[in-house]
Amino acid sequence: MKIRHIEAKPGERAFGYLEASRTKSEVPIHIPVNILNGAKEGPTLLVSGAVHGAEIIGSIGLHQVMKDLDLAELRGTLIAVPIINTSAFEAGTRITGFDGENMDRTMETADPEGSPSAQLAYLYLTELLPKADALINMHAGGTDSFVWYTIYPGEYGDPDVIQKSRDMAIAFGLPQVFRSTPASWAGFHTVAKDQGKPAIMPEIGGGTDFKQNGMYQIERAAQGIKNVMILMDMIDGEIETESDKVEICDGKHEIFAGTDAGIMLWECTHGDYLEKDQPFASVYHPYTGELKSQILAPDAGTVLNTGKLWPTVDQGMWLALLGDIAEVVDVDFS
Image 1: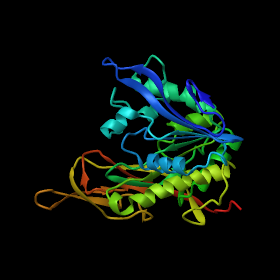
Image 2: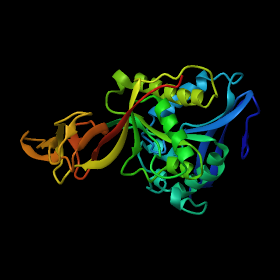
Image 3: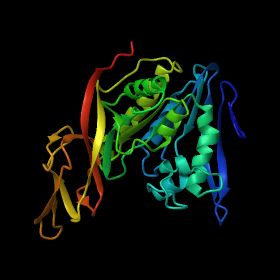
Image 4: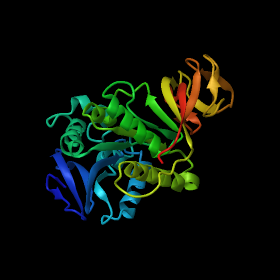
């Protein structure tokens, strides 16, 4: 496997940087890439993480997979990109440090002569994605939010690609799988699907309890990647999931904070069903503790496994998703 100057022969591992350009102070705008090339023939899986710089649970899980792989037994190739967006990672932010853009939303404006985000997107789409047979684009919650589900592009496109993406999402192993979200039109996984490549976007982990639960989050991320590799017959083993059933969900409504900022406490929990205008959370005055307002459900729906956890809220902040559980499927990869 060779990607520009980075080459790994069968049974070898290689690392290098794909450079798009440089900043005015000659800082490289690049993507660090690992190629783990198995000694045996097989498919190629591209796994990338940290397109949003603070979302690193999947990145650390990918590190674990890279350590555990036996290249002598690996069938095919793993292209591992733990940190796609190095400037966002450096700053610990959702946006590219060089231009303030959301790289995951620059797919349609990918341009080798555009903004740094657009250059990086172009590099990803022209140098990495074409080498792959399937894609896992790892996301996570940030330091103050928690997410625990997998998205696949399940609304439009080639039915065979969508079915393979769905199988990957279920095999990844989290108990909820989203086939649609309010923003499911955007991102690397949808571009991959449009190019005929099965793709998923796990949203796994995050939050303020990393000291207590962080290692479990990392282990689940690593196992999810391994599960997909087992599904693709790249490695031997049994697919291990959190549950023997998976909820297939449609994320329909986003919940945002209103004009009141302050201390926020939930009035519900993940899995609760809310009627339209039922309280989702309450906002309190930070100095007096008095109730300022309540944040209401914009429509009826189930509180899905996503949301801000830390009990402070800014005006207009994104908080969570409401949706429907469309079906419950048995997990069976025997």
